[in-house]
Length: 61
Image (spheres, rainbow, N blue to C red):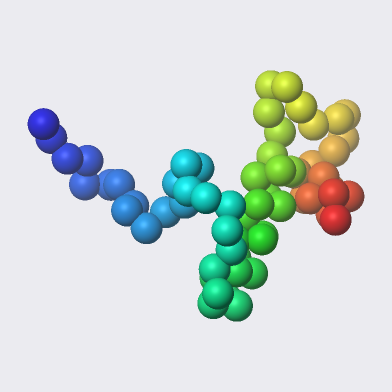
């Protein structure tokens, strides 16, 4: 079995639990990542006409 040299073993794994880190810097990044993932357009939730991901992210606050 080959190993992909481009795998980032420290990246987010969607299978990880939802608990936030005790480290404030990591916790802030986790919260931002969750907001960004929620704002991304999907097939089930496409962007509206003239809406950007940034607009959606700010609206979702």
